[in-house]
Image (cartoon, rainbow, N blue to C red; front, side, top):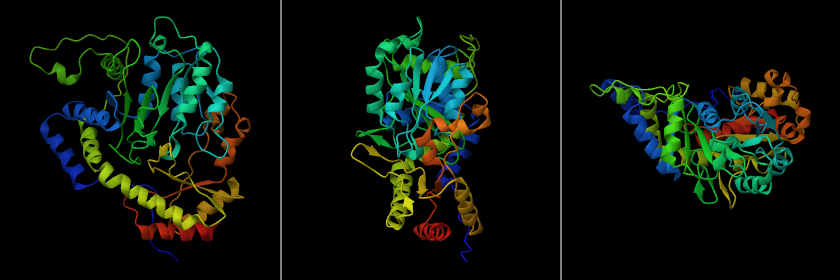
Length: 402
């Protein structure tokens, strides 16, 4: 029996990240400051976008963009039930109504055709989700929204008027570093939100970022200023600015939130970014390919997408599906894997299956493609400290457990 324990997704922290944090701790400035500003600058450059703003989570990024757009009661935001709860929770927080639409048959990502059926005059935004690091079909989504632009009725005097169709707010929590049509993710939507949580490809322990460009009537500098206001209680000055001698005065320009990223987290992110394309992503791709090579000839398994002529994966999750398997059988397989000391996971329990959303009247039977993908999905371990030998152990185990 295999004795080695294989965890699911531990972070990859090198001495460089540790030393960077030590230097921040010694600097006398540990909250939002020069490291966060530098991280924002480098993130924007990496993605090929005009601006990035760092926050304490991707969830904060999603909600602040909705707040920026003044989306609220009487409005609708379309998203997918095949996601973590954060994608939908932020809609509920604003008072707007989450409108769930099914995924494409045979895929994990939201179906553009399903979006088309759900658009109404109340639709103000769409939140597509790049599940597992695989980008959504953004051109198809844009085409659907353009075709239905006559239904778009922005609120007067709000940022919504800068758009002639519902805003595309990409939940790219899984897809930092992925590419769509030859460009890094960050350029396919109006706003793109990344997560730097502990299990993500690039981590700051906890954290996230919003990236964006200028659009009609608003420069990226102005959008940055507004999101920053929302992230720091609506203060006209951040803490670092107020430290200048005699420069204590500030004003609260709007009732904002407290969602800023600290320099301790940004220091980790800066070192991770240095390693990202040279070390972290190539290792994840190597492991992803190794899984495919070892499982592709076994008819019991349905493999996740790898690359095509439009998309490059971020290789965040290896989302395996097992033929002729339901939820009960899947649970039994997971338990058998645990007995072999291998941690696997499920991504995700669809949002509409959780009590918070069934209480609102949502039911999984309205989304048959979503349930079809979910009921037999098992996510295998994928992280940079995993070895090729470990992949072979995992593959042998899953073959024996199915």
